[in-house]
Structure formats: structure tokens, C-alpha cells
Image (cartoon, rainbow, N blue to C red; front, side):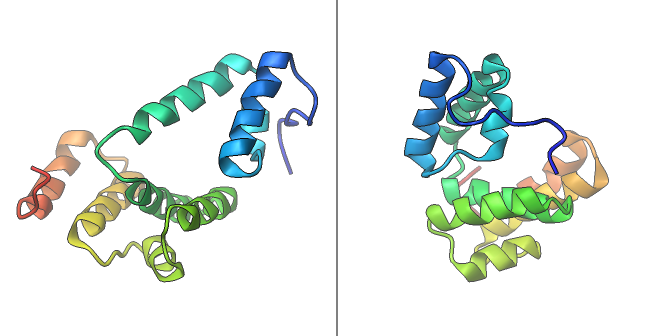
Length: 145
């Protein structure tokens, strides 16, 4: 049940429709989240710009999805789990990797550290300095630092 009714296909101004068509071309569909953001085109464009900026960071698409999966599981958000399972498959994650991430596990040490940090941050609501030291310690043997 939606609390805010998403924009229906064909609604919105031409620019918003063009933006949603771009989302559909990229993802193969337009998730309800994007249709809801489209009610305020500035919110939709801001979200897409933010997502694009994050995609240019150090984390791979698979690593970002592993983090999203453990957070979705921790928050018990079925919508997020469904979306990030689909996206995770799209970026090459196996069923085993997706299931493991939901359980807070990963096969590689870097991914395990990222998942553990994300889950810890999510459940503890702790601040950055408290959490970064365990991550830095866990990654000390990798080339990240």
C-alpha cells in the first residue's frame, strides 16, 4: 500500500516523462520509487544526480548492492530487498552472494568489511569515528588504504 500515489504513466510534464523514459531504458522498468519522486521533478532529478555521482566512487556496483542488501534486510524493507535483489543480479551478483549479503556475510574480505560496517552502522546508529576504526583495521591488509 502506497502512502503517496506515484505518478502514472503519461502523467507529468514532458521533461519528467523524458527522465522516466531514460530510467526505463536503463533499468528495463520504472520502479515506483522513481514514479513517486517524479511528483516533484526536482526530487527525481536530485536523486538521479546523487545516484550517478555515487556510481563514480571507489565502490563497484556489486559492492554498493551488497551494502544495500544488508541494509534492506536489517531494516526489514521488502520493497528494498526486492529492488536490490533485482539490481544485484543485474550487476552480476549470484544468488549465493545475494543470500549471504542479506545474512551479513561475503566471500571476500573487503566486501565482508563493507557489509559489516553497513550493518553495524544501521543497527547501532553510531557515529562515523566510532565505526571507521574497525573498518580501517579490517582493510589494513588490502590495497584500499
